Image (cartoon, rainbow over all chains, first blue to last red; front, side, top):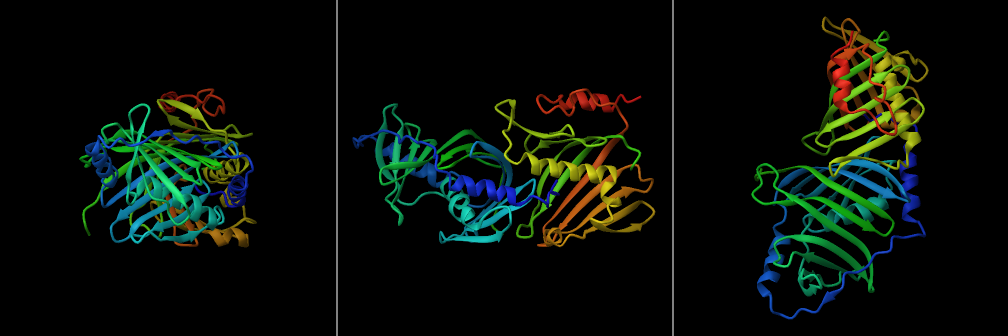
Length: 232
Length: 190
C-alpha cells in the first residue's frame, strides 16, 4: 500500500549517499583467452541468442531488491517493449512511484516522471543503464575469445564514453550467462543472467533472474511475469 | 469498523500508472491486530511479507525456496507506511480531522469516506484516499489512493474475517508464522 507521504525523501537520501559512496564494490574482470577462430558457429549462435533473447513486443512485471550502503529496499517494475515505443519502465515502491523512463527505439533515454523518491540523475545513470544492458540487445558484438572453463566471450566496441561490454555465453553460444562493463581496463559492472524459464505463450526460455553488482549498489531483479504481445 | 480488534483479509492491489494501459497487479493477505500490529503478505506474482509488531518493521522476500530477511534501510519510513495502513483498518484516518478533511457518501450497499489531506506538501502527492466500507461498517471493502499526477492504487479486500485469534508469531519480526497457520486460525475462530 502506498501511504507513506511524510518520509519520501529518505529513499532519495539513501540512494544519493550510495551514489557518492567512497567504498565501491570491487569487481574482477573475467579472464578471456584470445579467440582461436575455431568456433565461428558458436560465435554466430551467441550473436543470435542475445539478439533474440526477448520478444520484439512484450509486457513484463518485475520485482527488484536494491542494496545500497548495506541497506535494502524493494521495488516493483512494469516494462513494456515495442519496436516503435522502445523500452518503457516504471518502478514503484511501497512509498509510491519511483521513476518512469523510456529508452527509445533510437537509443535515447527519456525521463518521463521524476518523483521526490528518486533523483533524476540516478534514474538516467543507473536505472536506464540496467534497463539498457539487461533488456536491450547490444550492437556489433564480436568474438573476444573463451574463458578457461570453455565459455564464450563476445565484446562490443567502446561506446562514446569508452565503455566496453563483454558478454559471456555458454560454450555453444546457446545461453547468455554474464555481462561485464569496463572502462579504461577497470570493471565497474557485473551482471549474471540465470534461472532460464519459459513463460506462458513464449516459445523460448528467458533469464528470469539477474544479479547485478555495480559501482555502489547491488540489484537482484526477477521477472515475475512476461507476456509477448502482437502488433497493435 | 472500530469494533474489529483483529482482521484477516485477502487483498488485490492494482497500481494504475497514468503512462501505462494496464495496471501493476498483486495479491495477498492482510492481517491486522489492534493497536498497530500488521502483516501485509503478497502471494502473487511474487512472495513478500511486510510485518510490524507495533514497535518496528521487518520485510522478507521469498528467494531460492526460502524466506530471506531484508536489511531494511528505510525501516522508519516503512513503519510509517504500516501505521497508515493500520489507520485505515481501524478507522483512525477517518477520525483525524486535523490531518484529513472527510466527506461521507452512502448508498444502499456501502459507505464511502473520502479523505483529502490537509497538509499542503502531502496534498502535492496524494489528492485523496477513498475508503469503501460495507453498509454495516463491519468490513473495509476497498481503498483507493488517488495521486495528484493521475496515478491511483486500488486495493480490494475480500474474504474478511474479524476478531479471530492470530497465531503467536503472526507479527514476529524475526521469524513470522506461515501464512497457512494464520489462515487456519482465521477460519477456526470461536
